[in-house]
Image (cartoon, rainbow, N blue to C red; front, side):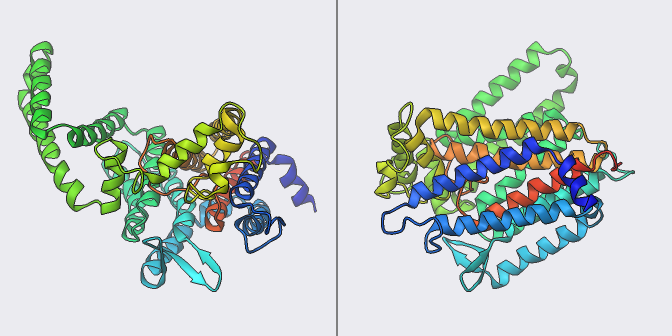
Length: 419
C-alpha cells in the first residue's frame, strides 16, 4: 500500500493529465469521424470508437502496471526487450498478415498487433542503455557506429515489411544523438542532402551540378583557409556530383510506384487529385472548410460523407480541423507542444543518464509523428502513413505510445533514487 501511495505522489501529474486530455480528444475525434445514427452507442464494438474505447482502457491498465514496476527494471532488461522486439519484427516478416500492402501485422482472430509500434520504445530503451554506459564516449567512432546500428537495424526490418513511414520514424533518434554530442554539422549535412534530392527532382541534374561547381569556386576564392585544402574541396565536389547523378536512379529503382507518385504530386510535378493526391486534396478541403471556429461537433460534411479516406487513422486531424476549425486545431497543437516541452524539461532534470537519454527518445519520436502527420494532412509532406500519437485510431499505436511515455514517467518518479 505504501509503494502505491509513493508512486502516485511522485509521478508527474502534468504529463499524465496532458496524456489523458489528448487521448480523450482522440476518442471524441474518432467518434465524430465514423459516427452514424444507426451506430450511436459509445460501447458499440463494431465501430472504431467502441474498439478504441477498449484500447484506451487496456492502455490505462498498461500504464498502471508500468508505474508499479521498479524503474531499474527497464534499464536492466533494455537489451532483452530490444532483442524480443527484433524477434517480433523478424517473425512478422515470416508469419505476418499483409494489410494495405504492408506485411506488418500479427493477426489472431479479430485481434491485430503491429510490432513496429512496440519497437520504438524498445529501440529508445536500448539506445539509452548503450549510451549511458560508463565507458561510452560519444566522441569515439565505435560508439557512434554501435548507436547507429541500434537505430538502423529495426528500421531496416520494418522497411522490409514495406512500411516506409514507420521506418522513417527512426530518423528522429538523430535528435537524441545530437543531445548526446553528435556534431551539428552532420545535421546540416543531412538537411543539405535532403534539399539536393528535392532540387534534383525539380531541376535538370546538370544545372544543379553546374550551380554547385560555381558555389565551390566562389568558396575557393573567398575563403583563404580553404585554398590550403583544395584537394578536400575537389573531393567534396566529386562526391556531391555523384550523389546528384544518383538521385534519378534511386527515385526510379528504389522507391515504390505509389511513393514516387506521392512525391511528384507533393512537388507539383504531377497533378492527380483523383489518384495519389486525392487524400491530401480532400483533407485540405475539410480543414479549410472548418474556418475559424469549425462546423460543430458531428457536423463535418467532408467527414460524414467519407470524402477523406483513413479519416479515423492517418487523417484524423482533418476531422478536428473541419468540426472545430482553427480554434480547435490550435488548441490541439498547443496540447502537443506542451507535452513535448514538458518531456524535455523532465529529461533535463534527470540524475540518471539513462533516464535523460530515454526521455529525449520519447520526445523525439512523438515530435516526429506529430510534425509529419500534421504536415501530411495539409500537404507539406508526402503521405507516408504514420498515426497522430494518442489521437489516431489503432490499438497497437496507442499501446506503443502509452508504454513509450509511461516508462519515462516511471523513470522520472524515481529520479532521486536512480543514478
